[in-house]
Amino acid sequence: MKISEDKFVALTYDLTVETEQEGERELMERATKEHPLSFIFGMGMMLEAFEKNIEGLIVGDKFSFSLSPEEAYGEYIQENVTELPKKIFEVDGKFDEEKVGEGMTLPMMDTQGNRLMGSVLEVKPDVVVMDFNHPLAGETLYFDGSVIDVHEVTPQEIAEMTREDSACGHCHPDDECGCTDCQ
Image (spheres, rainbow, N blue to C red):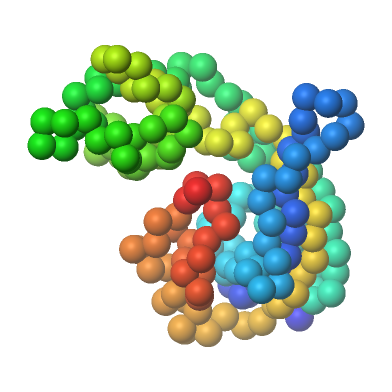
């Protein structure tokens, strides 16, 4: 069976990005046979360019492709780095040092009520410096992997993958997510 619209797909892959050392790449994410990336093809769970590169593949096929920033998470936008008043991170009048620290990713909401994920770059005396770019913005993504399952989607799989309580929007049967959005 070929990967096509509304098929259940499971993949293993390594996702790498270029490092500052010419010709070298850093592993950013890995999906294994024990914890594959599972999704329903064509439901908008994956990047459109990612799906185009695997469409038509069958179990056992290997793939190797790259996605430019434009095809993936866009360019890095410096204006998406902002300083927020430290007081908005207070709980009972005290700054929450356990949940707000350098390198942490926090769920936030903008003034229009849109949910955003922000990375804490720095905690200063009066402000918290947050980066609202996707962690892989500005990066060319390199995928190398293989197809381990393609089948007609079951009603149970549809229910599991479209649960609204999933942090990333794509739910995995074992509730473990390899999404960079969730890390």
